[in-house]
Image (cartoon, rainbow, N blue to C red; front, side):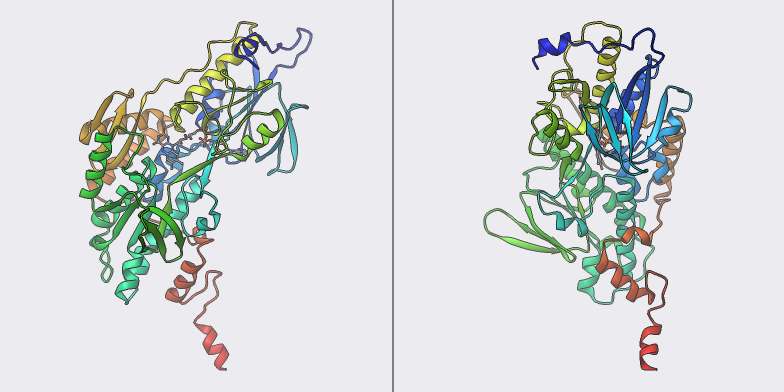
Length: 473
Ligand SMILES: Cc1cc2nc3c(=O)[nH]c(=O)nc-3n(C[C@H](O)[C@H](O)[C@H](O)COP(=O)(O)OP(=O)(O)OC[C@H]3O[C@@H](n4cnc5c(N)ncnc54)[C@H](O)[C@@H]3O)c2cc1C
């Protein structure tokens, strides 16, 4: 489908005699899907927004849930509540398992199999972690993509300090107090900074045997600098700020193995080193939603190595002008996999759909406007690159980071609560969300076994101390 051809296509609005309005189905209520839905609520369409979760997740602040600063609800408003006043929007909890492009139906699986018909479809299903073919690392090095992931990480991070406090052997205690983060992009950098602050400032007077100030936070990456997509001088500033917080930044080091006791890194010239760490976090690769590959197989679109779809200049699929894909699941030259492109694409496809319904020509091809990127490192420390030109660091970047994150957080309630919580965290030098959820440890069998020994009870509520006694009888 050439650009000229796709510009000519107009999807017919329903015939005058029909009472049925044009049906737009949106798969995914993340940054792209939510923005598309919001931009279409006043159009003459019926919108069905399908998501496998009941909330819109503000992923850029997930690391603050994982480190006890924010509560899950503050960054994840219920999707349904965001469309309370829009009678033409139906929010549907469902896991989309398949899309039939011929019959124009979306098939959901999680709430009993059902088909949702569409006239126009927007697929905005995002991406998940990629372990570059080593999926068995996932149970030793969880990633952070969902609220559940953040809850698991919070439990594992906080539990590590508890286990260290009860561990008499200094070597084993040191392993509990070592946190290895794989991937020095924005997520890895922000997480490393927050874990270092937690250990060295928040928890330092709270334990009697473990000494949280001795905790090691190791940030690992194969690249030569942190925040590789930022200007080199900002990377340098970020690295210095991390080191000031006590993070050991270990670059040009490829992770070659991960197990329950730590990571093995190679310097690429024949030297390998094991780092003993009971908490390893994966912040490295991403893989587009499998729905991308499914669509590619059905319409002949190409995929890149991360499984992202190549789309037409108006973000539709080749030969399928009524189906759009947006956000992290598509690949456009020079466009990063971040929130801004997803938001801009959501708005853009809404414009295309509105133009088609009015019988107007397609708006010009999608063009990404780079508003910049930023990463927060610690108290008063951040780096920001605005409009791909202006570099900020230190307090100005920290303030810009706060203002921009608040502006994009959905809902005034969440904004007010978040400001209050940030203020409290800074002033009290404490964290409000410090619950360890044992259900969050599913998958971390070796940790669960040790915890059972420490507590003398089994995770299913059975008291393991009675077993030797029972056996002796
Ligand atoms: C930890 C972390 C930190 C980040 N930090 C930043 C940052 O600081 N700045 C920045 O710009 N970007 C950041 N990003 C990236 C940014 O969040 C993404 O680029 C953005 O969310 C992409 O939007 P999207 O709409 O494509 O996908 P998402 O926002 O991921 O939304 C996808 C939605 O689809 C739903 N879904 C997926 N599959 C299905 C299915 N089969 N059926 C039904 N529903 C489905 C999901 O539940 C989800 O709600 C971060 C990402 C992560 C994970």
